[in-house]
Image 1 (spheres, rainbow, N blue to C red):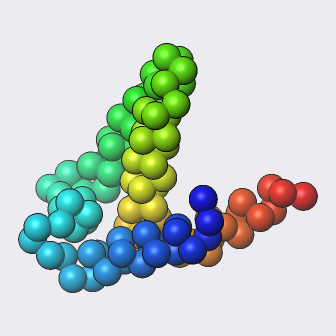
Image 2: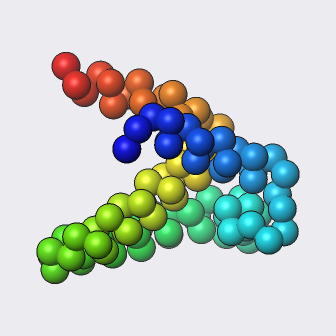
Length: 96
């Protein structure tokens, strides 16, 4: 996954956070009555689904659930007022 794809997705998430359009799933995560817990629950759910897809060696589902996990992780970063650059910088330190 290129940085450009992640950057575009994160920009969309930040836009939804700022505008809170009524028909947006992303915006609904920012306004959910459970608050941050709603995203944390989704991260747990997507992690479990990814593990099960990997156990079943289902490459299509692995890709799908991985994308869901990354998306919800980016929403969490936005909720914490972090930047994508924070994640990318941490990943960069692990290349060494």
